[in-house]
Image 1 (cartoon, rainbow, N blue to C red):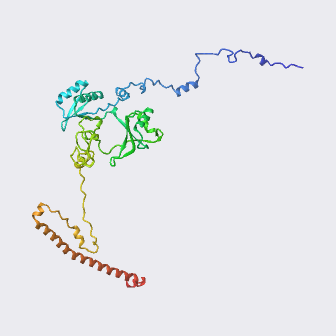
Image 2: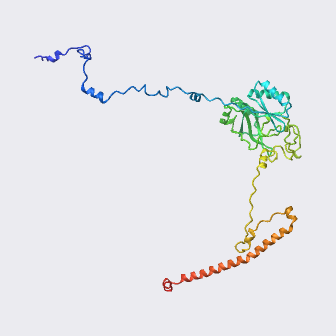
Image 3: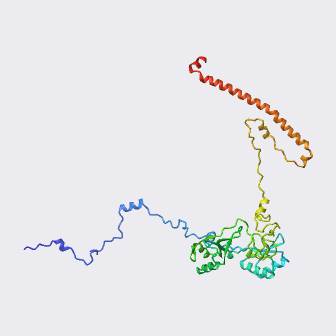
Length: 398
């Protein structure tokens, strides 16, 4: 067999270890001139100038102003409200305020109110408690208001029987990591009977608000509801004054029923004897909403409602009796006063004049009505005749 001869081209191809390595070094001429096409491209599309020196610095590189730095600072915490303290019948107020400043080591100011009362303004909660201790030590009569860290959450439990022990409710809530302060059964104010409702008082915190998610107490299914706010102003159960709580009152007690100087729970007044109000000395209890010393009633006295306008009633026979209309238009009689009683002739003559005016005007009105009725009758008779005649006769007559 004949062996095929290899071509010369196949024998001339060198075998290289790296197929991507160039066979010969590239020809490089540094002084080589550019072609005409490249020169025309550069003339048509010149390079952009360096704009970094011309452009202003970016917003991120600009220095921040002092106003912008202050706006980016976190907001300051809100200053807590410190309630004032009101002292009754103070003696040597200048020395008393000075002693409060020395005790609290802060600026405590005061202001005199009506009824010989001193209003003290503490600057912090610690100063407020220090002044309260000093007032109790000196046995001064005063009252204050609730601080922010002393707010309470009042919850009503609905669905338990009246014989359920409040101690069991407190024990159950404590087992769930709640901190109840007190629990008692609610009573109806008018019927004086127990309601199947329990009031639980807790400190007002975020943990205490989780009580509204509970659905049972022990083995009983119940509902937890917030206590509804009163529409009447708050009243102290110790001194019976308004706009403060008995927990922050150090005044002398006054009874709600008999106005004596003792607590209401210690009153021995029989139920058949009338009550006495310690605010107005009226024959009602001090929490009566109709008491004249109640702030709601004082507002009504200062802003009385406008009197309603009164009108004369229309007569029943106005269409059949034309003489009844002038009687309505006459002015209403003024009730007798001292000036009217001294001159009785003026009222009698005024009434006689009205009567004569009504009698004189009645014939004229009747005549007018009779003439109008006659005209209407004649017009209707002629209209009936025209409608009865045919269309041809009407043209002949025209």
